[in-house]
Amino acid sequence: MATAPKKAQLTSSRISWSSGEYFDGHLVLGLACPVPTSGAISYVLSDNASPSARIPTWIRIPVVEGELSTEARVLNNADLEPPNSRYAAFWYDLAGRRVAGPSALFEVSGDSYAIDAIVPTLTSPVVSTSAPVPEV
Image (cartoon, rainbow, N blue to C red; front, top):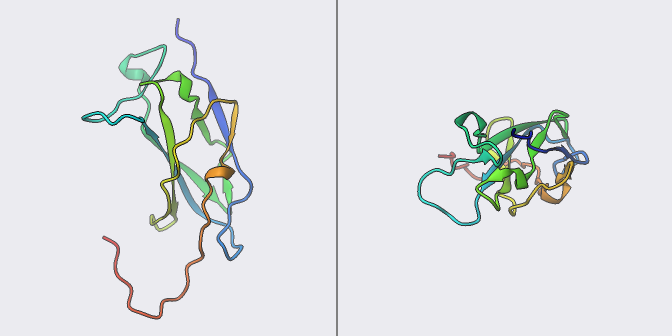
């Protein structure tokens, strides 16, 4: 009988812009394999390889007034196949613009994971003195 995968709660001190204003947006975590393979990588729980055990390769975690959602949980990397999976982090503002990331790859192996080590310096936007270039 398959056992449930171990989950870790994500924790963090309050996340702020360089101006001190609290960050509102999303932390997007993605699973990565250290050795690239052709085609899409499909992650499954290690003791149950049925299609219903497939997990999404990307998760979005809301950050409201600098605080991660208290529901934020990620799976222990040891419970995933292919082996040696790692997470990468990207930070998006409320408008959907990427403001930081990717982070260095990291592994979750305990009951909780403090993301403070992957929180980037979020430089506050400033008023432009030249014409902006639209994002594509």
